[in-house]
Amino acid sequence: MTDYALTVTCPSTKGIVAAIANYMADNDCNITDSSQFDDPETGQFFMRMSFENDGSRNLDGLTRGFVAAAEAFDMTYEFHDQSVKMKVVIMVSRFGHCLNDLLYRWRIGALPIDIVAVISNHLDYQKVVVNHDIPFHCIKVTPANKPQAEAQIMSVVEEAGADLIVLARYMQILSDDMCQKMSGRIINIHHSFLPSFKGANPYKQAFERGVKLIGATSHYVTADLDEGPIIEQDTVRVTHAQSPADYVSLGRDVEAQVLSRAIHAHIHRRVLLNGHKTVVFPASPGSYASERMG
Image (cartoon, rainbow, N blue to C red; front, side, top):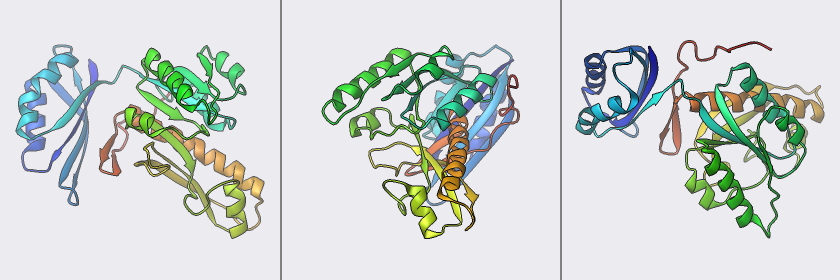
């Protein structure tokens, strides 16, 4: 049996689910998991469905055969082979907690992706990456060479055939052109204090204000800095007795968790854009299982 996923976005109306279910039945497909959302604010319908096929229908055949049903409901849709791992480029600067966490999850199979390259503007993590048999590219970025550096970055992405860029604490602002070119295919992580605590030492600022919750946000990158559609968020409670260094350590831990969950949602096609927001469907049964431990 081959595992597939179908994602659908269209104007909300009657008969959508029935049309999709009938198509699956007519093509010998067994639905194993399905989630849907009807947004009354935008009038849009969203759906993600996992299903199995005995091999009698391949991806191209399923996609072509669905055209009539899709046109009847003005659907935007995609079929995905869930056995094909998404190709990912990770970008990092000098904070390595997110990179190391992703490498570990990738190594044990908890994050089923194909890391095709790691790009950094520093050499700090070259050895770590190369020891994982992953290509490492150090591309220095300065105000003077930024266009040329971004061209090099896009060359690596395109040559590797990457479907997704992950900014694992990459401390450079991407150009509007790159954001538009990779729209919906760049995921970033940052502390959740924005816009309350901008600039240097956000955790120190939070400590000085006596906050009781710190956290992290993962979102798609757009030309509006740190204002792209949010995929995943989480928080951790802190107390008056903890130090600024405690805040940093706790913050880094939650950043790594939030980023990995956002990537997990994206690679399993669980995230659908809804204007400036996202619809994030629950994970299918078994999708968190690791291939191996340790």
